[in-house]
Amino acid sequence: MSTPARLHISPAEALIDVPRQIQVQGLRPGEAITLQSRTVRGPGVAWVATARYQADAAGQVDLGRDAPLPGSAYEGVDPMGLIWAQAPEQPGASREVFGTEPGAALHTRITLLREGQPALEASLVQQLAAPGVQRREIREQGLVGSLWTPAGPGPHPAVLVLNGSGGGINEARGALYASRGYTALALGYFKAPGLSDYISNTPLEYFETALHWVHRTLQPANGFVALSGQSRGGELVLLLGSMFPELVSAVVGYVPSAVVNCAQNACDPALGREGWAWLYQGRPIPHVWENNRHATWAPWDEGPEPRRHTNALLTSLRDAEAVERARIRVERIRGPVLLLTAGDDGSWPSSLYGRMVAEHLAQAGHPWPVQQLDWPGAGHSVLFPTVPTTQLVYAHPVSGRLSTTGGSPAANAQADQASWAGVLAFLQQAVAAQAAHAHP
Image 1 (cartoon, rainbow, N blue to C red):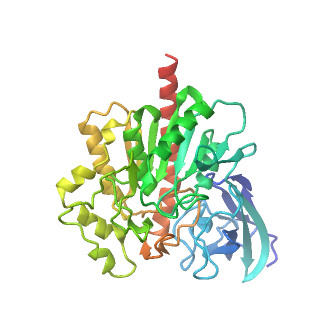
Image 2: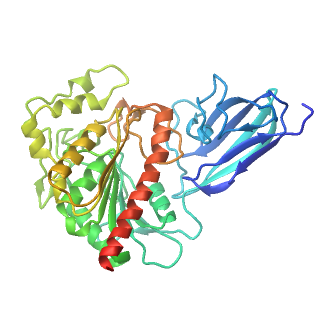
Image 3: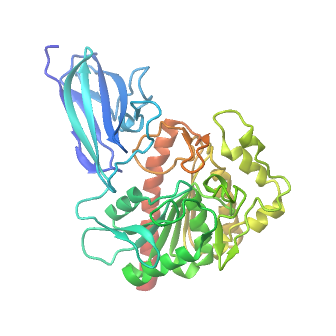
């Protein structure tokens, strides 16, 4: 090991959505080396990945050019493979991929091993909140959330961020939206301080209040307020856009539904999974499981492990009348719609749902842009750029039932990165269009 090696990461510190250049120089031509990544996430859990590479004739390894050797944590060329291929060091540990503090940066240590011995280390920092981004808790008018404000003078366009059936407040996405120039209200609606532990019977007036609060209090640029939600939150943003169109400028649905669903795994056990998820003016919003002649939970309850929730939900779509009763009236949305969907979704059939939404909008002659970005090999976790995608089987945070989100780590990682790029481009166009309309 006579040659002095150099481990180079560029940029060493940047936003989490920025790919990095990871290179090793000064190796012997053809030398095999090992790179290990280690990131502490969630409640102090170490996530790690290991990959072996072979130096070229110039004694260099470049992760943006070189695929790892067989037996590594990932396959193929990917500059960020050492990040998304990470898995918890201790099996069964927390699946939380972010830090415990809202918007905290993630610090990764990259170690170079030569002949099995540590030779060099370098650090890689992934920021969620850019310098100058501000966070404050919102506890007004019954609302429970976090407001993330971009650096620099406003007004800024606004995004209301909603989580899925795990509940809670999506701090990470709020921070990243603000880092890219959007005032983001990450709003909890269950499993958040002072709110119900369950999605059952959630009043939609809560979100109506939030939308009015955003318009009145934040006074966003040109009145632009987008909705961004994932999974049950993806269903919810389409529903809210259809019910309160005058308050919504654009809709971003991550793995959304085309129909209103029952409470499912996030239900209050006393009310059951076929209970209502949403209420408005004291009345339940009809869901697809009601009076459905073909819906059955058997493919889920009796299916092989790891269970795929999608298999049960597909049965509910066989009853065309029930589907039409529960269909979200997306044609009422007054703005562009972006659908981010996955063809191997294990939680529900988001690709099919996305096509249903797009078809209904086309049939209605929707005058705004509609885009479906679909990743056939990806699963339900099309969520966030450059985080680990290896934990495909999980216990639902409310019901505790084991299931798979589907997809593969590599496909999910590609969809995570590409979906966020698609969202930023979509919102940029939507903001520009609304500004042009406001200032012809």
